[in-house]
Length: 65
Image (cartoon, rainbow, N blue to C red; front, side, top):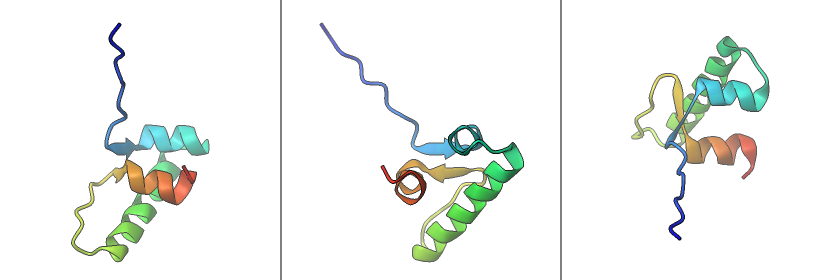
């Protein structure tokens, strides 16, 4: 029997942030913006996407996974 592994997307979007934190969309976007700025400060060569945050960074910074 073949097991299929469902992979999570590389980026976390505002819907997931809102669900994780129980906040409205505007606060979710504010969290993403703050994390993006922190990530960019740590490594200025990184590219950041508006409205999304790298899953690994998000989980390490916020979820402690």
